[in-house]
Length: 165
Image (cartoon, rainbow, N blue to C red; front, top):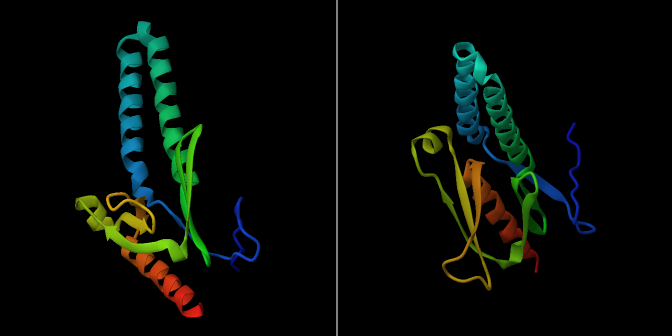
């Protein structure tokens, strides 16, 4: 049974069609860095007990860094509705960027997968260029699973909007 999604700023009559979260692999670098720092701090405590307070502070900072990465991962989403794209990019604990684009303003989209891990795990970026934007500026939705497939689903929605006018 699928539940209906809602979000702050949703227009009346607007239906959420899909919610796309970042690919889970984006957590790997943060988790690896945190694990290495915690392991080094534990080694420091084992071999130099007088450094326990310093090492404990380092462990806490590493865990806060990891928690921040997980929080940003969970809160950053692309919401596709029948009227617009709604992009929530959580940049930190106290920094969030929300961008909305009406479907009829989309001029073109480009999906980009670059690098070994992204190609292997099939995730990448979606660049959306809108009417009124400079030629060199595009909204970049980063690290989404199968960006080409998302691009095609949005393009099909645009086509439906154009046909209904």
